[in-house]
View 1 (cartoon, rainbow, N blue to C red):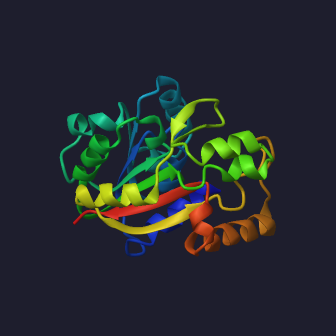
View 2: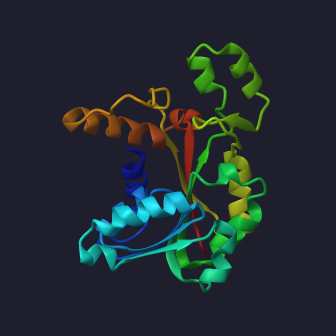
View 3: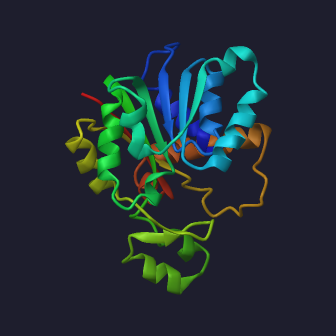
Length: 236
């Protein structure tokens, strides 16, 4: 569900039908990369975890030749983009669900911005550091909710202690790397509290859910309390 919402927010930046050169940094199992390749874009996936990379490779191996030929998968991380690519090589750089694992992200973000062609889009999906108390609070975990008010880290669903990012800080960072904030959205406003083993709805119910999430993600005050933030910086 999140991947579809992000696709639509990214595509809104470009003319309908434009074929984009996309770099997906920390692509994981390749879900977003596969969606974009199926939509006709050329996608390069960068992933440092060999297991995740193998899963993505297996997923693309089952695709038709026309899709496979638009995809390149590389083992590496977001700090190595300058090793693999020339500056200005991409129209879109995705960095989704990655910054929470990076202690000092500014240098990596500066490198990602250099990969963008003029007018290119840097798409960040981060944990919302201004709303860390919401999930434990809604679950009735008051000690955790109170602790989260004064914390910049949280325990994710994998049990790892990771960073969160704040809108104000990332806005300043994007301005400093010549990819100033163009638009931002809240993601998982209503659905963050859903149990991980619950199957999402289908059909009309799924469409209603996605419509509600999309509207809330664009409107105050809802987007301010979303679990995730989607920030779009544009290279000058």
